[in-house]
Amino acid sequence: METIPDITIPAALLPADGRFGSGPSKVRSEAVAALAAEADDFLGTSHRQDTVKLVVAALRNGLLEMFNAPDGYEILLGNGGATLFWDAATFGLIRDRGQFLVSGEFSNKFAKAATLAPHLGDHEIIESEPGTAPSPVANADVDVYCYPHNETSTGVSFPVERPDADGLVLVDATSAAGGLRFDAANTDTYYFAPQKCFSSDGGLWLAMCSPAATERIDEIAATERWVPEILNLKTAMDNSRKDQTYNTPALATIFLALKYTEWVNENGGLDFAAGRSDQSASIMYSWADASEFASPFVSAAENRSHVVATIDLSDQVSADTVVAVLRANGILDTSGYRKLGRNQIRISMMPSIDPSDIEALTNCIDHVVAALS
Ligand SMILES: *Cc1c(COP(=O)(O)O)cnc(C)c1O
Image 1 (cartoon, rainbow, N blue to C red):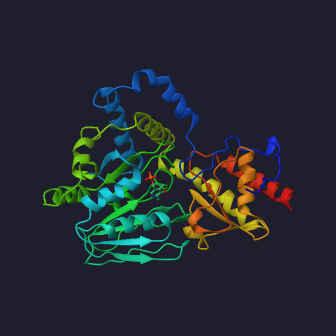
Image 2: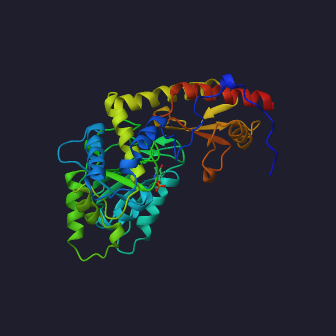
Image 3: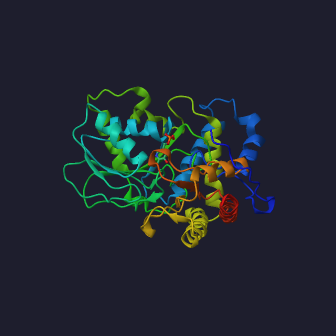
């Protein structure tokens, strides 16, 4: 282990909150306090009774409001996070073949899960260099189009678009939901886990489904296809419609996700939340553009994510050292995605993070780099 240079960042420069991780991401203290206040009546109670079911109902309704969902869209939920949802979709939403847009780690994982599924046909994989975003292309031979709204590993956001074709559009919104604007009508399944923008904890998946998506779930469930019960979207749908989950959920996760939903909806909706991320992104990318040692990794400005920034550092500055010094000063989880293998830092700019803390972080990085040279 290399020793970490002994650099103390002056307290006046430090952000009010040191959590900048891209997942799990900052949980709002107000939400934790609300959970603590209601804990004795909520935690440790049955998820099949009204106390918890009313929270699930409020969450399902609040999400439809936040996402400005067209009539007939509904929220499904279950255990296992976004990673489980990929397998569930492989069993319960893909009829035979999908088109997968791959550019980075997370988009690749869903494509891989579907490719390994023996009950499915040959998929169409459209891959592009990390840092770019390919577009879906109409193809009469596929029945789903799959891409992320925000590729968390590379800091690229994808336009949420529907190709001019019949297939369902499945959007992995894990790091985007609740932080980036989109048109829900362009999606059939907008799914995510709530430990990122939603400022909650992991372990749950939530999916906004169009009528075409719920019909597809019913259609596949009526076939002979064997589906493990924990991955069965028809079972998840039946339970969700009763404001329950198939098996026991983490109650704190559901509660915290509702608190974020209320915070956003009470302050003006998705525009409010996305506006905070826009402000943070403007601070971050202007700083990097002007910096002598930092530059945005994503070259196309329109694809630069407003919720996860990936910033390359020049060869003279070691990202590992900067990240370690920041951590020693209470500024956490700023390292780049390992498998990308770049001299890079990665910063969450999700709505819970105050834009003034992003400003403070850039000042701290400048301080550390000056002290290192
Ligand atoms: C974090 C993340 C996932 C994985 O979420 P889990 O809840 O850990 O399964 C999937 N997709 C994207 C885009 C992510 O950012």
